[in-house]
Length: 133
Length: 133
DNA sequence: ATAAAATCAGTAATCGTTATTGTTTCTATA
DNA sequence: TATAGAAACAATAACGATTACTGATTTTAT
Image (cartoon, rainbow over all chains, first blue to last red; front, side, top):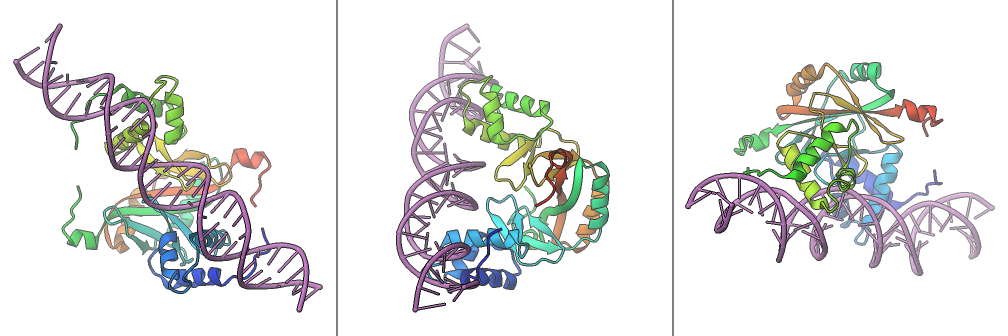
């Protein structure tokens, strides 16, 4: 691990993610931060997102839809991903601890965590007349 | 949905996936099939993997590590992914139906499926002397 | 104040995947 | 069985997300 020096950009990225209740991609972070830092670089955004998630200060969500998403909410929760609009909603399930126990019984190694995504059609898409296929 | 005509390449791709107990990437499929079809194209592999997974004949696994993986085993199961070597192991959990019920209680839409991955260090890596960090 | 090291902006390169194009292979019908 | 239209192909270019590189800037310890 490097010495990790303060940087205004990294703080801004962290702050930005904390204020968002959706789950922006690196590119969204980049675009939004350009208002505050007109010449921040996309590489800087990526580097700091990786840094922050390695430090465990943000969560990285890989959601099938090409780009990765980032989540400033560290409280334990899962995601409901709409198969139509690909929006990511927070959702909370209680039984995670017992799931890990279950998995440990047959896993070929030490189980440390799990990632649980639910898929379906969100209400908004259903209301907009999208009914599967 | 297109008319879907027979193709030797698609059959070979399906057969290949059925015989594998690991979870190859498109590139692995491509490399291995080149022995049987010396000039099969990577585009053909991608197109048919997408086709087969749209038909529900194979499963697509997105595993964080850059590339997508494919699974010829359609029986319901989950995956244990080693955080060190990134190998993907099969694992079976019973409670999936009740998980979906739980999620449905609070999800902002109709829950149709879930994806459940477990993470940790596999026995092989543990034995090879890798002990976290 | 200063110097070493981390971070930066800018940009080129890489990687996985998809799209395009002109050719080949299936398959239905004659 | 010949043949014509459609689907699939190989080859390759294009694309989007991410990473690597380079020389300038910022932070921090002295």
